[in-house]
Image (tube, rainbow, N blue to C red):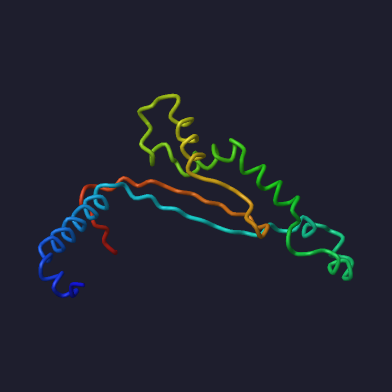
Length: 150
């Protein structure tokens, strides 16, 4: 069985060339692909009983109500989050038509922006009964652009 040092001595050119080639290919892919930023937030729903006015007048009733929301509260939030009106409001408030550079699309620019926003985001319930919101945004970088700290 050959010694490892003998193998390296014989194959050193192939090892170095393969390493340099893989670094160059990886660097090219990283520099030329647009960056995708993924944000995930996890939250607990508030209890609908927290807005109960009777708890102000009765101290013992607070013990009966949990501060965490019920699964029904979470289902209401999930149902609301899947509505087009939520995505429309977010797209208009944050001016995503300009960010996604869809001004030239005309009348359908806002519709395409909302569709893209829906495709890149999700609102789900995780295994612990928490609300999980994921949002990904694709940033097209300039070629060989290096961000600097200010």
